[in-house]
Image 1 (cartoon, one colour):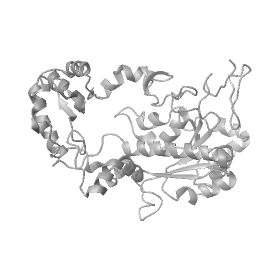
Image 2: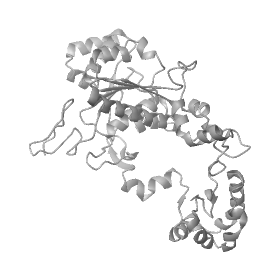
Image 3: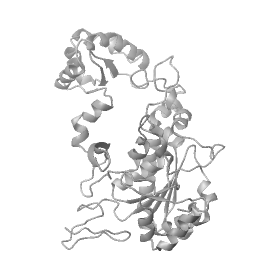
Length: 422
């Protein structure tokens, strides 16, 4: 089948009438969409990568000689490869442009004319000061969708404050809920605020693209890490608004769920119990060898707090579950129709057969590192398959390629390089 590469306009079809795109025989949902990713670290870049997985052409805009800040977080001492850059920039084309210079801004605005989306998470107001903000971009291309990420939002005294994932975890209240009563506030061990912010950015940009099909106009999309944290905790905040009471710490479960819901220690690890509905109570207690607890009023009462209930369950259940391995308990609970999951570390989770079979973890042959595992996409689409890019670009790897496509001459590229604009 002949590969058709196209940009804006209607779906392309080969001579046999099959829809095709730039990554293979199956057309991606966003084939024909161009995204300028001027993001840093995680929030902006991961939003762009998600769109790239769906077929969009992602042009990564980076500062000459330095690049995205994410490039400078090494895997470990002696290994300069950056998991932050590699993990959220695969499948993109890197173009170096110094947006702070007049020539660099002009190059960027030329690219804006060819693009559908700009994504960035610079400090609020920075790009506008450089002459490449939404107002300037929309004048050149009224159809442009301009996704802007911030830490605290565009209004209020913190609008221009710089921040990052841990700031949103702290300000958004998440740290106050993790860990156990009496322990210090505890950050989540991943950049969860950045990730949630990136997914909200993706959702907003995709909705704006859909709206543009009806109106013909682009628009600005603003997403903050702080606001995304609040939204991610909507049930817990709603509980506080309704009751006036803080939900409290997770204490190995959830502060609002008054049930057999939490983690218990086994002979070789930990296991998560995902609640025991009334129809499964008898089977659960019989499976763990404690049928006497079926009629125990302490386990029927909903008058206690979730924290007290968690403490009671752990006092009774921990000695039981510590007698067998996680795998053994999993088999028994599965047979009884009870919901459960092993508490995995990264090695165990990556080796879980569901990870590879569903494409969540994939193995690639990297030109320098050989066989390498990477995180795929959590999204599957039946008609327009998601196709994750496999390799993150070197800094400026595609500068000449992209600008030549734009119509620039070699002489102009030389002049721009000499001035430091690219």
